[in-house]
Amino acid sequence: MTSSIPIGLTPFQHGGHLNGILISGRWPSSTLEWTQTLVASVRIACRPGFLPTTTIFGVVEERPDDTDTDAVGMMVAVGNVVDDSFIEAGRFLSNPPALVMLHPPSQTRPSLPECSQVASGCVLLPGLPELGLEHRAGWAEAEADGTVVTLRNQVGIDPNADPDTAVLAMLLAA
Image (tube, rainbow, N blue to C red):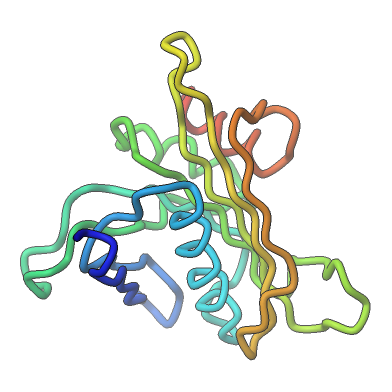
């Protein structure tokens, strides 16, 4: 049974900053599992200085040659939202199964006043509305100690209704 195989996430860095996350074991198979993967990614983004600014990651179904044999793909940083570099970099993504945006604690406004070191993120699972396959998304916010502050999933979203999904949809359209 596929669901008994855990989904593993291993961050990799370049120059001390998060450059991507290796996905191992198996692919998330539902909106809920992608959002759970997002929660783990947000926890990684909470590491002080590891994610300097809001960054977009494209999910690719390729794995580096020098990785473990159970790697199935990775989330690769395609750029940040400080400039439009992510649009140019995103052109190399071909029909990604998911796009992820991670906000470090320095760029996250906590939804609860008692939470101070909170990172957040969004995952967009692109659909094909013209074929009846709806866009899906998940949003998460977590503290540095791993506490999940908010978690939300939605099927049938309008990407333009939320700032994070709008930016991710813009990358898909580029």
